Image (cartoon, rainbow, N blue to C red; front, side):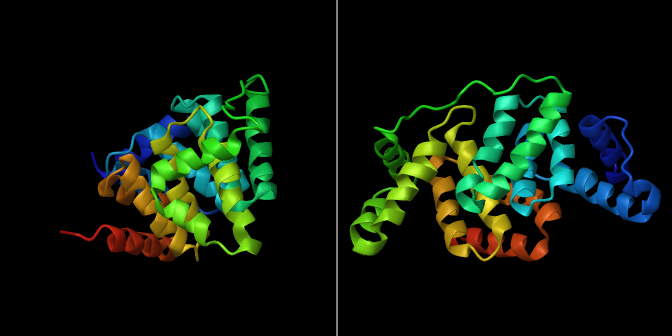
Length: 251
C-alpha cells in the first residue's frame, strides 16, 4: 500500500469521516499534511497507535496548539486509549511547561469528555500523600537516573537545594508515581515533551539516558521523535536526535 492509501486509511481510523476545514480552503496543504503524517510518519518504526496518540497529545500540549489537541483527544478515544490514560499524558506535561498551559490543555480534554458523556472526575491515580511524596519521588528518580541524583542533591548550594527537593517531590513524587501510565511510557513522553520545548538539550540528554535505564531502546526513541517531527518541526527534532546520538552513539 502506498503512502496515499496509507494516509486515507489511517486518517479515517483516527478521525472517522470528518473533513478538516482547511481541506476546503487549502486542499494542497491538507494533502501534504495527510500524506506526510498519516502516510509516512505513522508507518515508521514500531510504535502502536495508542503510543502515537499519547505522544501527539503531549507535544500538542507543549505547543499549546489547542484546536489540534482537541481533534487528537477524539482520535485517542477512537484508537482505544482510556480517559485515564489521556488525562495522565496531559498531567505529565505539568512539571515541564507549568500549570497554566497544562490547565489550558485539560480544559480541551474536559470539553471532549463532556461531549462524549465521560464522567468527571476520572478515578484518582494518586499513590502518594503529603507524608511520603518526597521519599517516593526520590525513589523513582533514583531508579531512573541512579546515584547521580544523590550527588546533585549533595552538591546543590544551600539557596538552591529547594529546587532539587521540588524535582523529587513534585516532578517525580506527584506525577511519576501516579497510576494510569507505566514508568516506561511516562519517561518516553517526558523525552518528547522536553524535546518539543526547544533549548532544553541538557534535559533531553538526561532523559535519553533515563529512557535507556528504564528499558526503552534507541530505535524506540528515534521512532518517538520521528513521530514528533510533524508537530514540532525539523530543528527541534534534529537537535533531539543529535542528543540521542551523543548519549547512544551509532555502532
